[in-house]
Image 1 (cartoon, one colour):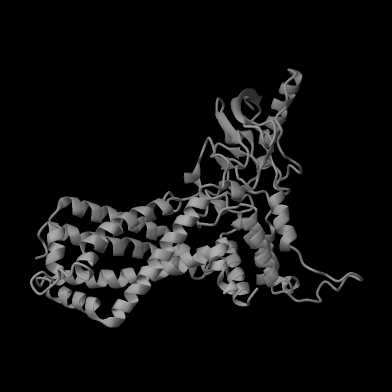
Image 2: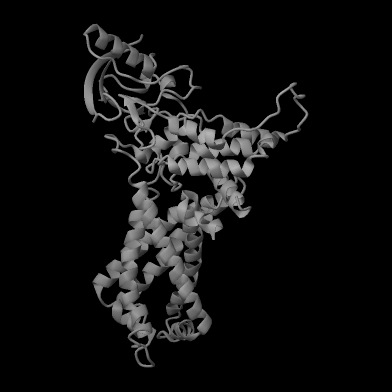
Length: 251
Length: 222
């Protein structure tokens, strides 16, 4: 029932951050029900058996929630399907005999560590700049001590589904991080717990975003179209609104 | 002043300028198109000349003209800065690029379309604005309308104007709704309205503009 697929992979190989990379071609026989990462596991087994260096790629949960599996597949982050991560992409989305080009996220702010693995520390530094709330220690407060309208909770939760994978940056022609920062700012600005740092947060996070070397947003919508969690463009509008509001208040 | 420095230092501040000047230039297009459309009275340019006279010799319109140039220059300078820095945000481009799967070509080409419009504007200002303001060649005999008719006898000029309008159309198709998104105006209840109005605006205004050189060239307007 399952026919084996003969796949030709053109994979980006790069020794380290400072080395110049190149494409390497590999043949692999895949099962249609394998995930894209499992196909890479098979390829790496082959490479190890023949005494070659396996291809470095990031992965962790393999269930679409951690955001580690960063691969640009045939020019699209996380491959051709909408709303899925690379680990949830299956070989049945391709055809027998296909040649697939796999590249790392390409952005100045995401230097390549090795092969397909990039350093997304820039996102961590944006979060450290302001993507948090302050809470009192001590006894846990009653869950319903602060009432939040359902509509607001839904909006915050929609933004909170961002897994910080960086597909938005990799898809954007300007390598802009606005969808990521927009999601993080929106998630916290909507909720009562996020109010004390609301204005200082957005200014600090935008400043850090600019300092990291991400581009400016031109509203092409590529980020949202490629986002595995389908974060809407409205979070970018909200980020703008929050930032201008903070600036109007002299922050 | 420190309060306003973000308008020229932060990416969001620069975009705010792009958005506000963009919307300002959009309102100018309405006035410009409305006045030019008076040639369709087909009265030998009589009504059109009256309007041109008012626009050229009323002090507050002249004052607004300075504002218009400030807006245009800000839009161009910030736009060129953003486009040139945005172009260098990758150490290298993707070997395989499938951008058409996630965005429209014109939304990715705003810098190019804007540059074409800017080049067109140089030609356009030389044709009319320089004649009226600096060469003072507009008088009772040589009216704005007769200059217009003379310019559009040249088929090359007609082609340049039509291409300029086509670039404007695609620039607006993305720019109109993008300006509102940048201002933070995005909600499921009214964003579809902004997008619909923006699409029709981007088609109708450049079409009207482009129709003028064509109809004059064909001798339909006398």
